[in-house]
Image (cartoon, rainbow, N blue to C red; front, top):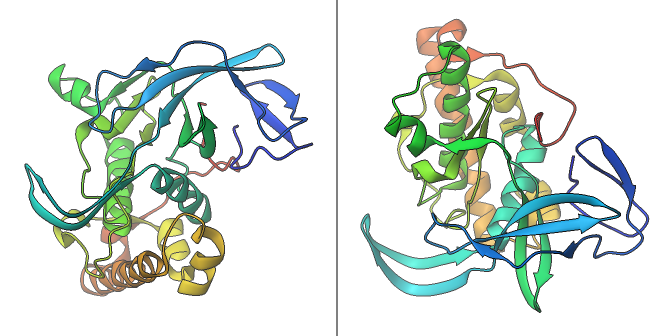
Length: 268
């Protein structure tokens, strides 16, 4: 697995190969970056290599802030589109043991700061699955993954949760990518209708989130106001599911999903 930091002297793992990083850079670009055909933030795909081990990465350099921004969803005030939110999202997913967000790290490419994410091989986008009318063989497992995705989007207040930002591997594992338009200042949830059920461990981890802990883990990428809003939304999600459980019964609201000890899940 690709860890969150590539510090000097760390042992890291790429798939089944163990390599030792002797410098903070770790990997170098071996191939010219190629544009990814989908995505409004114009990410690129690059090939990384270190000691003969190769893997691709999705690279985002977007860093835009506007007082007002007009999109198909309407006008958004205090708009931000920031590559650093991707790194914050991965670090938050590790805290929650969500295991559905591929690794994101901060690096420089051609002198420009960027997020690098582990490329999920042999996957399709959710929009492609829908267009091909493909259905998962295990619908219950699929639904539980999607419930977790919805909780995640409410937590981080993603203003662009489109179908190109969900990848599906061959074993029907869902991977959530690109939260560069998330972590808004709103202390309200976007839409509680999206909150249907919740994984028990995810709910337990949400209970542990507080402003001080989030500041310690995420302050490099999020402002104090963004962290405070995130903490408030976590409390509101917990309160929502507590009320749902009291009204409908635990079995109708909560479920258990098998976990792996690997911070970013399995299959990478």
